Amino acid sequence: MSGSHRFILLADLHLSDHSHTAAWHALQWAVNHINREKPDFLAVGGDITTFATAGSTVQCLEALERVEVPVFFTPGNAELRRPDALRLLKDLLAPERRFTVRGDLLVLFPDTSTGTLSGDERAWLDRVVDSSGVARRIVITHYPLDKMDEEARVWLTRWLSRHRVELLATGHSHFHRTRHVNGCLEVVVRGLDPDKAVGDMPGISMFESSKPGEWSERFIPWSPAIRLLPADLPDGVSPVGWSIHGDPVDAARETLSFGLACLELRPRELAFSRKALAGALQALRDRGSLFLSYHLPNLTWNPEAGRIEGADAVRANVDCALEAGVDSLTVHVPRARACEMERPEGGQPTECYQAFEEVYARLFRDPARSGVRIAIENIHNPHGTPADSPDVAFATRIDEYLRWIDAVDRGMADIPNATVGALLDVGHARNNGGDLNNLQPVGDWYARVGRRVLGYHIHQVDTDPETGRLFGHREIPGFFSRRISYAGFLWAWSTHQITRAPLFIEVRDDEGRRNTVRRFKQLFEHAHRIREAVELPDRGEGE
Image (cartoon, rainbow, N blue to C red; front, side):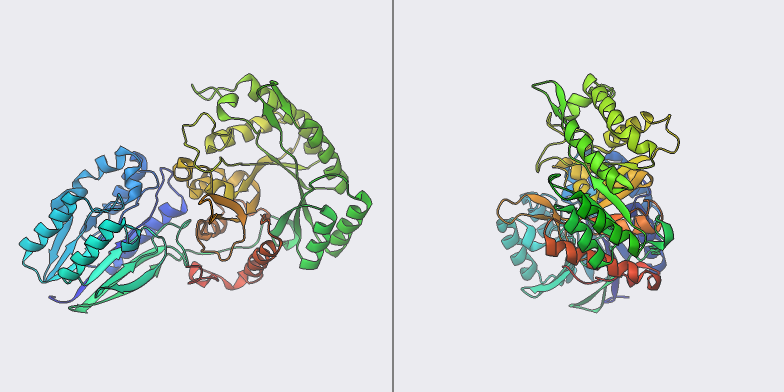
C-alpha cells in the first residue's frame, strides 16, 4: 500500500569460513525470521564476512538465497579485505541493483565501504534521485555519518537535507543509536555478530513507516536457548573462579572470602610460606569442593643460544603445584616464532619443535601420571602484527595450536587417563595482533577448540587511550560490552560446543577482577531462571 512500508536490515554478521559458529546459527535464525515476517524487502548493510573470503561469502549467499523477499546489498569495509567477496557479490553490487522503488518510496544503497563516498557514488546518487520521480527517499549504507571521513560526512549531510531524505540506516559501529541530523532520522543498528554486538544480543532491525516522514525501528534479538548448568565439575560446583597473579596465600584467602570454588594460582616468585599456603588451601577444602589450577612460567626458545630456556623455573613451580595438590597445570604454548617451530611447506615440525616436545614430556609426564590435567594456553601476537609477518608467534593460529596440543598428548599416550587439552584465553583469541583477529574470529576458536578445553581465562580487551593499542586483562563491565561480547560464548557454552570447564577471571586490576567475578557469579547463581538469551542480564547496557 502506498505510504506504508516495512523492511528488515541485517548488518555486521562477520561470518567466517567455519560453519556452525554462533554467527552461522544466528544467520539461519535471521533468514527464518525474515521469511515469517515477510517485510517488503531485506536490506543487507555490509560486513557479512569477517575477512572477505570465498568460503564465508558463499555461505552467506546460500543463506540469502532462502530469503523469500527481495534482497538488496551494500558492502562494508570487511568486504574489501580480500578480492573474493567483491567478485562473488558482483551482481548484487551493480549500480542498477543498489536502488529500488517501492510505491512512493525510493530506497538507495550507496557504497561507503571505504569510509567515504567516491565521486562516482555521489554522481550516481544524484542521477538516481533526479530520474526516479519519487518524492520519498531513504538511504541504507554501511558507515554512519560520524564514522565517514569529514569531507564525505559534510557532503552527505547536506545531500540528505537537500533531498529531504527521511531515514538513514547504517551499521558498522556494532551498537544501537538513534538521532536526527538536519531533519533526517539516522539509525545505527547493532548487527548480527554474537561476538561483537554491543549492549544486547545480536539481532536484526525492522523498520516501518505508515505515513511520509515517520519511521520506527524495532530491534529483534536472536534469542537461542540458554542452559548454563550443570558445569563439567563435580558436586554441582560453580565454574566461576579467578586467576590471581601474585601472592598465592592471599589469593587462597580471598577466594575463601568470596565463596569461590575455582582458583588458579600464579606466584610471581616462590619466596612465600608453603605452610601458610597449605593452611589457606585446607580452609578452602574444608568448606567444600575446590578446583585448583596453577599457572606455570614460560618455556622460551633462545635463537642466539639455540636452546630452550625456563625449564628449571617450570620444574620448581611444578613441584610447588604438586605439593599444593592441584587439579590442573596451565602452561603457555612454546614462546617461539612460528617459523622456528614449523616449516612453511606443510607445517612439518622443526628440530626446535621436537626439542620442545621432549621438554614438555620431561616436565609434565609425572604430573599427568598422577592425574593432574595439562592445560595448554594460547598466546597472542603484539598489536598490529601482520598475518604474514616472520615474527608471528607460534600457535597463535588455531591449526598450529591444535597440532601442538595433539603433539603433547601423543607424548603421553602410554599414560592411562592422561589429560592434555586447551586453556582457552578468550581475550588472547580476540586480541591477536592484526589480520588474525579477523581471519580467526572468536567464534572460530569456540567451534574448533571447544571440546578440547580444560579451562578458560576470561577478560575484556580495550583500547589504550594514549597509544590506541588493544590491551587485555581488563574488567568485563557487561556481557555485551565492546570488543568482546560474551553472547557467543554463552551460546557455545549452552550448546556444549565448548566444554563447561572452570572460568578463571583473569583481570589484573584487583577491583575490576572482583567486579567481574561478581557479575559471573551472579549469572550462575540465577542460571535456573534463564531459559533463553532475552532473559540474560546486562541487556541494553554497555553501549
